[in-house]
Length: 77
Image 1: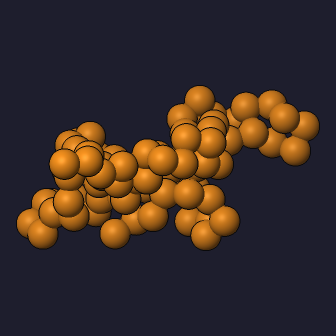
Image 2 (image 1 turned 30 degrees about the horizontal axis):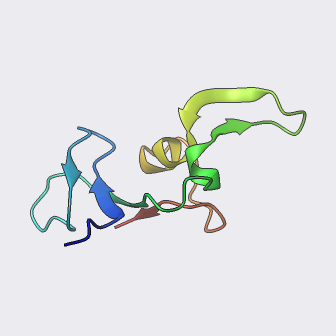
């Protein structure tokens, strides 16, 4: 059996799920491990290329620190 490259991650408690949880207390995000170069995995930088945060974009979006941008990888479910 081939392992799935999609998993679900809770950005609050960092619990990982193989399938979308039905009764988890926080909103989880769907991660596709096949997209290693996804923009959502990179830290946020300003127009000059200076890092504005060390956290990856998916974490900042999931915690509400950045608005969701459909042009970047991780999907909240």
